Image (tube, rainbow, N blue to C red; front, top):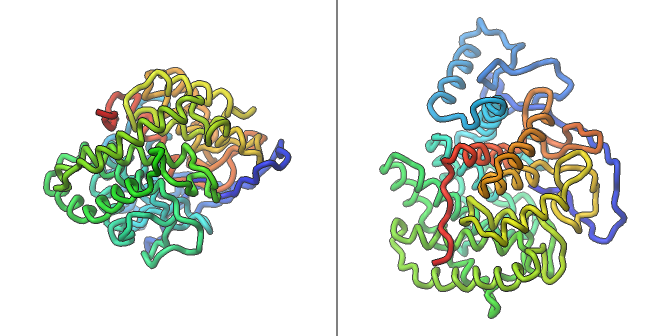
Length: 423
């Protein structure tokens, strides 16, 4: 999740060294989320979020160890082998970041201690494909309680559900991501009763989100300009908005039966949007903005699991993966992202790993997973950034990156569902 605002046109800042503000996350005796300082000697007991400095003779500590290990066994840990440790920690971190109310913090530090619909949607998908549908349902429960009546989600919400923490602009991509998360949940959950409960709770939000996407489209078939995952005001529509709305609307069409909705209006708008994306963004190699806004990691939102494999998109993903690579081996958000250009953002690196996995490039996906694995915090969590010294930086764990890694490993295992393409 991008929180720092990009200042376009400023001179690139190279060699940036950034602080690592947390090394991991655990819970205290009361269940409150606590960060682990990156300089702390503590490590986690294997298969748990319990620190090895905890008194294991304490019955409550022993119960937390048992609970964490039992929870991992209740689902699946993708990526057996060299990436299993990263996958286990990603799952356990997501569990700690998800409260009993379903509020999933983006990260356990200051301004990140809020719920982004985008991050929450990816966590729902990660929970779903690893067999933790109860936790996915909890996150949906939170989203259903804060869902906007008009289908236009705020950038983020307070964890108590009382609304947004500030006046940050709405981010229209949330309407698409929530629909994709619901589609992934429905297509992976084995419990029909749980599916019925979630669909019932989310139906108003899902219908409103799909309708909001339809209403956002102009005469050219593209949505209006909106802030996207770069978290800055935009004057032009970005690929980071058009692509998530495309997958969201196609997901809504496929969900129309369980939502008990006539999909004709959604299908017509979906066809218009997909055609417009191909004919406008596609004609220029899928840049961030038209006609020449430079490569953007958002091109990965057009690749599996968000759409079937497409040769033009695959080529654009490969080109962008090369052009956005920074010296330490990770990736920046886009070519016009000029702040701290030597710093890698782990969500973007993981986005490319996911796309490459979906396109059948196992070697490329594993190369990026290795980068992420090798640049975890001392406690094993995935940070938001990797700085110019190739050290983990900013906050950790980051829920979005943790979710993306789990989705990528699931894709490499051949078990990640792909949203249908245009009819």
